[in-house]
Length: 216
Length: 275
Image 1: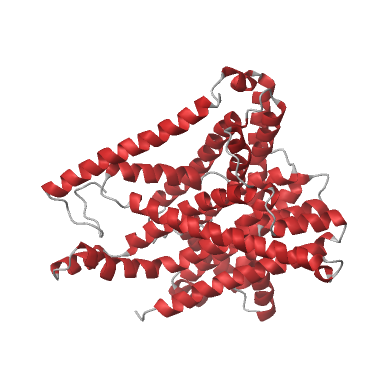
Image 2: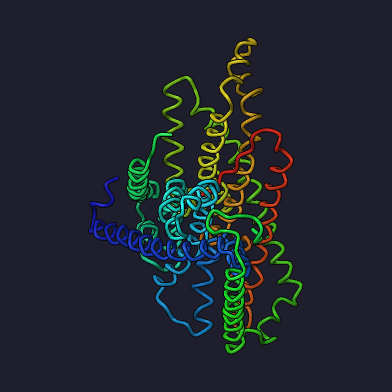
């Protein structure tokens, strides 16, 4: 059972753990940027941009993540684009997660009642004030819980990277399986590592929710 | 949102704002057209539209393989969907049980399988038990993960049924099992159907993980075609397979919307499925 503490496996585990965290953190960052941009497109008053945002989100939300990993891994080299498998994994994960972030943001903005903006305008607030002081703070509160589930899912999804030559926790599982350790014992330790990551992300989001909670 | 419906983010535009939107629209169109042109031009430059790369798809054998891949994907999906709904209902009922040990066990099971990456589970199942039959590794992994997620969806649906319903059923003398199966679950399932089907779309997409354990579902079939044909047509294969997945998922999503619009007699709520 004590697999991580035998034969120098510990450094393998540490590398895998850090690999998962690095991959997830970078992808989270780019997914947020992309998601914000797409959400801005989807709620903008310009029909063309709205259409583009909708098409983009429809395509990438309905494409399996494995297929996207497959695409960046095998398609880009055919186009003479040579990037490391880590960069490719970050691209696949952030494009996939970005469209989910976009949908969460859009849903969040839709939860703000129209009357809130009307009241702000009738008080004489300009566009920036209405948005910054009235609409976005309320949207942000509605967005936190679903955003939490998107970003708890991200490290889980990043495990697919291990099948496409990125070194992270799934690669550790594969390596140790090849070394011939008992499979469910390896599973136990890898599972534990993911539980730690999941609960850490979950704790961050529930702390944020507590801080922004209001009595209704 | 047409310009006539109001939005929380911007006012109904006046003449100057309309002109600005028009300019932004034109610039946006040009930008998107440039992006598409660049994609197509890059593909063409690399010879990806050469007839030789698309030859493979003319063979009936290859077409048959793609069809087989789709069928394998759908078969896995059907098994996983049925299994995850059964497991989900059981776990949901378990989590709502009056008996603390049952509740505790179900909670642990649900939390554990929800936090686990599917690849990790599928790979472990494949290596340990189903090396000869990768499909069952995939199906059981999918059932465990999606069952746990469905359990949470069903549970929150049952909790959302107004309390008076259960109280009235108890007052009529129904037993606990009857209250659950005759009164609460039917109502909960109807409110939660969109969320349940949303999770089924995730299940359908996740069948592509079969690729990793060499189960010949659609994506794996695509890889085989690409790596065994002249000129390694990876890009044509991706261009063929992706729309198939998107259409299958959109069809399921359309089903969800249709059911939602039909069942809008009660308070229907739509929950977004996580990635």
